[in-house]
Length: 325
Image (cartoon, rainbow, N blue to C red; front, side):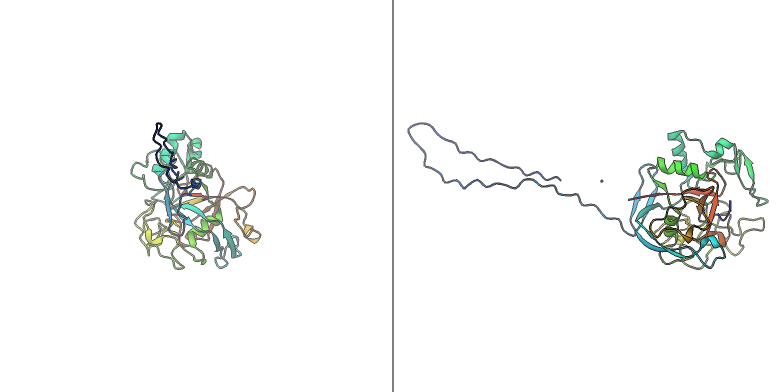
């Protein structure tokens, strides 16, 4: 993987006059002229308009979603040294909802049980795993979402961890089942960094205690020994509330890479439309965003772009979904 929706009814009472037969005629009574009452009118149900800070719960999988108001934001980076992140440009998006966290193993298990879906890793019989001792990432026979480190591993104690070893195809299928969709790359980036072009969800300075990244726990001489986030591999989703984005989205950087909908074109930013860009019409690779537990500071920046084949699976690859209001 390279850089990678009362009526009020009115009761009308009709008043009628009674007549009495016989020799005595009762005095006439002056009745008021009949008044025509207005017809019942439809009273609209008051609905709350979502705004910054609004949340909702998805019925299908119980995911909490946070609201991202429409408007413009600054996308990309000119100072990273990676040409595919530039030029910095303004993008205008319509409002949308985004999953507060990455999809978890528990959620994914429900999806599989209800649909009988088979993941790409299961079809292949292998996926790219991780050797805790050597720090090497390599194809591992029997590795899949429920066996992240190979056939002898399980997710029995990882229900609230992000599901991994999922391909773009798997992620899209899950989001469709859940009644949502994959985010566009632009939607993902705005949700991660807000409107002021910040480098990380919380600001411009890296803080290894605000995310799950390559730290002292990674081992094999690879992690940043100046930080201890408490985990070697994945962490339970939402473990770093201090790393929340301006919209309340969690784990937007670190933990696992997240598939988005776009195809990859490294020069796309040079000609992307101002309004609601949804990426190239076709391509060979799909975009992944946000870095992972296996990546250092550089790979966990909000503007960093990675990509992989849509059928690719990896112990660092997960996803979250979005929703149009």
